[in-house]
Length: 352
Picture 1: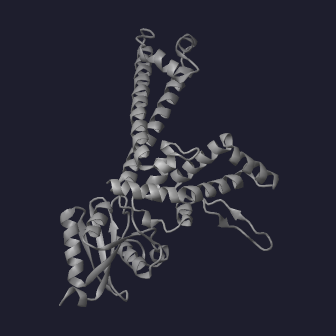
Picture 2: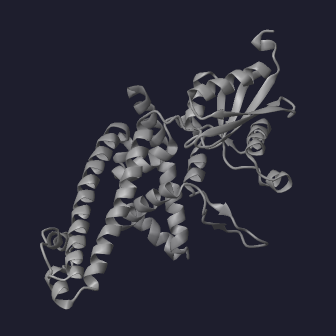
């Protein structure tokens, strides 16, 4: 029997670190079977061969295409299968049937069959993915450096007055320099321990500072090459440009409109009307890193951009709250940046 004459089957996969569970449905939703595989290339080939033995596999719903299911999603795409990302499990099915790997995989397949709550996964193979990788490392370095200086200052606050007067400085870098060359504070065990700990924390802070400089340099180079149009806009720096591009992904066809990007960033206004009162509220969903990047751009413009300052004054006179003005500004920024993001991603795809 030729491939064209085989009935279509739908694959749903529940992904984990070591094992994946796949479930097959026919075109009317009948359960055909399930298979557990190892999360490696041999397992992917086994899953594809099993699926094609039962029908014509054209679509697959995979959970976690950006994490545990990334390898499987890439493999299936290379084999010509349309991979769809399952946004969330069917909670109603879980309430009635319980939870297991096969039922989660079946829910993914039925979601693909229904055509609801599916999205095209990110390709993770270009400049946007490179920016995401650097941004992940940068966020953790910033967090670790902040924790380090807070711990160092906390130890100095509780230290004896003569030690605190000797080492405490209001400026962070001066306080760190005082501690990094510290030799001894006394002969008792706790003073020796305190000196060693302060010296180690100071060295850690300096190391993380150098690491951040390297990461910032990488982001500067990446955004200068792949985000030229965005970087020319007022208030858009390397970190915010990298965040927005990494959220959009390397395949811009995922973003059907600026409204889709606004929803992805959590800045689309949500209806909150009731009776005669017509209003909108802030969206608490979406990617929070992208939302924060837009908030940063909006704050920079509110402080330094005359056009934005005129807008804020007008909206304030109309009785709008600060939160409502921020929401409007972030939505306008998305409208401005959306075509630039698409153009930058298309240019970076040509370069790669």
